[in-house]
Amino acid sequence: MSQATNQSWGGRFSEPTDAFVARFTASVNFDQRLAPQDIQGSIAHATMLARVGVLTDDERDAIINGLNEIQGEIERGEFNWSVPLEDVHMNIEARLTEKIGITGKKLHTGRSRNDQVATDIRLFMRDEIDVIEVELKRLREGMIELADREAETIMPGFTHLQTAQPVTFGHHILAWQEMLARDHERLLDCRKRVNIMPLGAAALAGTTYPIDRHVTAELLGFDRPTENSLDAVSDRDFAIEFTSFASILLMHLSRMSEELVLWTSAQFNFIDLPDRFCTGSSIMPQKKNPDVPELVRGKTGRVYGHLMSLLTLMKSQPLAYNKDNQEDKEPLFDAVDTVRDCLKAFADMVPAIEPKKASMYEAARRGFSTATDLADYLVRKGVAFRDAHEIVGQSVAYGLKSEKDLSEMSLEELQQFSATIEQDVFEVLTLEGSVAARNHIGGTAPNQVRAAAQRAREALAALKAGA
Ligand code: ARG
Image 1 (spheres, helix red, strand yellow):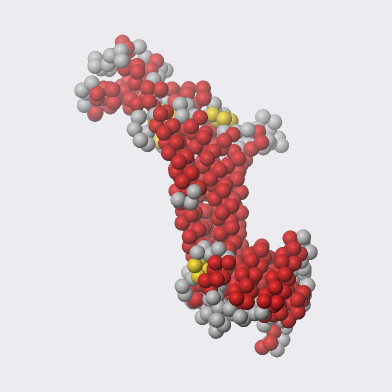
Image 2 (cartoon, rainbow, N blue to C red; image 1 turned 45 degrees about the vertical axis):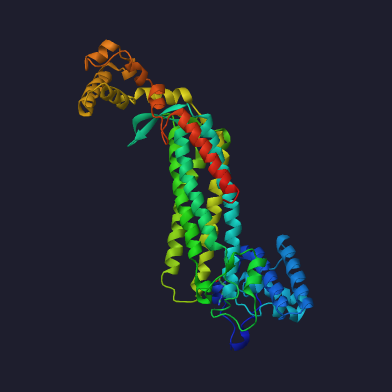
């Protein structure tokens, strides 16, 4: 880091910035990550300035060539970032002037770092949203295919984490997929509000130069320029919205993680995760730990924290730009990185989940999970639901004493509790009969799971086509 005094605004100052204050106010150590977007924005700005006659074509070309060279220097790690130059914007501009002389100083005509940084962040967010969306789609596809494969696999469904009724594993995985479908909609909705261009708002009030903001917006792929210059330089609610999406998504991934952790335990023994997603213990040789889901569950907290940081950062800011906004970047960058990495981990891991079908089946069989089916059976034979509930309660009590599931009792044993019970009861007491009977849209029957997987596939494909 070079220690040269900042010349960009030195004109009205009578003494150099205190060395600590220079470090305290500088953002270059983290905002250099915005360099590609900063250069992209500057190239569009210079192109527009030439088109409206503020720069000559030669000046524009010198600026664009210089910026492209700087991009190369940054990519090759040759760029000398300077803390006294404060931030990514002034570092790049100073280097441009060093390379092409006085023309470099003309780039900043008709703009301010305030609209520049707002533009950079929006370009960055758009790029990252698109990367995140690819991973989210890949994860959803993996879930849909896993659900389709396991449409007939039976597991216990839970309420209060107690065995409730049998469900199919495919149905459970499609419940996860539904959560992600809503997250996906939230992400795409957020993108609409991200993709609006602040450039041209300048410091806060606009500029006296004859700029054409529609040209710049089009060059940068924005849907339109922002409506109000004061709002343009100060608004960060798109970042809050993204972090809110990220928090809800990670809350979902954390719930899934919790289930994966439980399911891989010896006590549940429902699934196996391939070794590549697990680690061992340095002391207990038998251990295989589900680190990936545990970490996703753990990382959820930091993203919630970033949402709180950004909300609090904005809550007292008067219009328009305030330096507070420099604090938006680190939470946002970390939220982006965390979401992307957690989605990648899940997208890699989910298709590799190996259900232990026999063990899941056994668990569903053990917990009297077809008790509701027996009650429904009695109701169909004319017994009032409350009486049916009582009869089944007695049957379960008997089963607990005799260590028999309902389906393991003989007809005579069952008839102790109700003479209405006949041979056909065994069709409903089996796990297969129980899940197959829930045969309506949104139900757990295997054919419904396959149909739901197909609808999910189509919905995802429609999103891909930009629908
Ligand atoms: N580094 C600043 C930020 O991240 C750029 C804008 C600075 N503008 C200013 N007037 N000091 O927000």
